[in-house]
Image 1 (cartoon, each protein chain N blue to C red):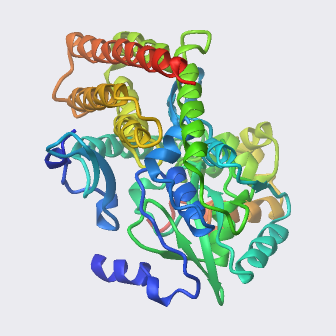
Image 2: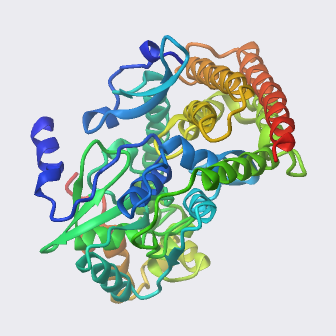
Image 3: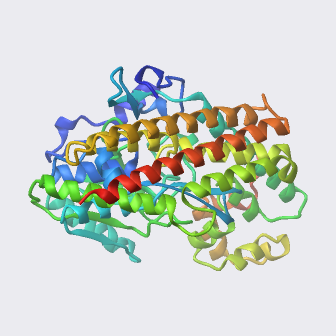
Length: 355
Length: 134
């Protein structure tokens, strides 16, 4: 049954009218950026390069906000920022449109598709019919590419999926106009057409700028809730969760932390590995051997995030429940915070010396 | 994470797509490989779902007890909050909160009822009487 579903959902690339190539990625916005740029003529951008040039690594816990009645934690930078920053670094024009009129939003998308121009949309996942039920929460910062229209169906390249999928016009309109936090409001975006391949010099400058901006975001945002400080902030809070919230709610909170950390579209541990890959790939354009050393530290940090997730799962599965277990979880995050602070400082002083 | 340590557990997403994962090979170079899922993550998802189910059941009880109107039940059932319902309904949050009072709910216009049923993707009948025939 499931296998049938899979073949139904996934369309063969050969059946496409356009020469668009679907690229699967670890993170949706990286994937959209990479595929769209490749389609319009820039092939040098890989997922890690887009992530690094777009300064995608981030951490923040918003103290007075709740998401699904749990802590509001984000591991990513603002939606849309990775695409925009990467394009700006390469001198590629970016168009982004929001709509109040649904008909107009669909008509303008259709116009581009008729002209053979694949276009990205920000969508909500709650009504995304090809996703498994278990992943369909009210989360609105997912990114997909609409490749072409056949009758009433749209061919969709969703970077999380292995192949192309389809949505009916009703379904696509519904996800483009999903409501809630970060409501996409029909947003679509695309780079200019017929782009010339990026010069190595542009990549080099984009990489430097991306690293500088990421160091700023992780080290220099004032207050305790963002960047590497934010990780320790969450860590210190976890110590109090058991007594303050009770076992049940504390378990739910920890599960939410892990979901934000490891789930599709976001990713904490996974993001460290992509950043590690970025630093390795950056070496081609910015030949500093220290990049390899720092890359290793991000790998270590990603591993520690995964260990912390395992500790958290011990608690939310009910295997561990003492205050000592919470303290241990807390200490793990504080250790990660320290490690990442040192790593970003090293990265910062390395990149400052570059001219 | 080394390439051979990439978890290959049964994941919900794994049913329809294996996820791209970055990991290092024997020489320490980053490569990509696919993962069918990671139990730690799926368990977190299960906990979230359990908590949703619990909230839905609590909401059901409140509606049966006459403390809350069906708007409250359907909001929880669709995993929404007052803000999301208000946005879909194109009305104020405080109106949604008022509509959750059984006394106010009784006075709702046909039009509003239909709109709610549409937002929650159910028939008008089911919207008004969620626990009949079940």
